[in-house]
Image (cartoon, rainbow, N blue to C red; front, side, top):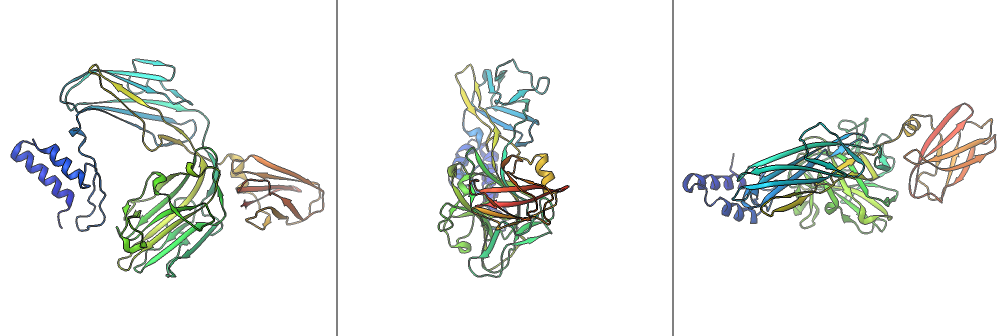
Length: 449
């Protein structure tokens, strides 16, 4: 076992406390922070030089000011409660008095009385608390909760991989043996998920959603669940987007706002300088969220890319439950003032609380219904709907979006078994065809490019 850089930093700080009563601690923190060994740095394994996480922030107590941190329940269902925690810290060298905390209750939520800290007032959407004083290096914590309304995020695309390779293309960019594969060993939900095997040889493989995706017009977000365990610092994956049909690809790392890349990956893996990726061990399934607001209204292609170099292999990268939705989130600003003239404000990081999108009951029932044949699928303009038998009665064919809303209805006379239908007017996305045939409800899904 060897000492790492963070171990060395901590040893120097400990020595300063022992020999000089810690009078140089903030200077030491400042020097190390400039070199990426700041307060939140993580050296990883002390036996590796490539699996650390850099940080350029000094110790918070070395910045002599009032600080406030606000946290919230990160993910809820509609009508769930959100728990808020506000922590105020006095890192100044003097006592702070008459500390006023004013927080905004998000629109669409309602304050729940009788829980947590007692406010001094609740007026409209403003909730207020007061702290008489905070001594040097003292903290105080405020808690309260709200309940959300029935609104939720609107799902526009979802694939839980239960239909196997449908919707996806996969191949190797360097003609290696390793390619993404559908498997059943590791999955977030259901029975199937994708896996990029982490071989001991050089790989560069992609998993791409092959129809164009129409990015929603309001707060578009992509999320997916993934699990990874790879050769730390050398083998890993990242996510890319294209707006020109796949000619040029852009890394989405700067758009990720929850569970971002682990850190930079070695140049030998992809031959791309300073690229970051997910590598090492995720310690189970994690959900990553990507802000697509820069691509509102555009048709895009999205792909996952995994690579490794020659050397040590690993378990791989697993991907499940890919989703695109119009995000509904709750976030608001809290401000803290003191009698000494301090004022500091903040919001909850990572876009606050996100309301989960979800299929309504009608859609869940549809997915469990008997199916009909639809082709071509995906399609750009027309589909052919092939029924298992001719209808004894006139037909009504309904096209539903992923939220169960009927977006197109057509009527056809009886005794037809193969029915052409123009869907060119529909936006790109996934849809259900619902047909009542004699005494049965028949359903299948198709993709409109």
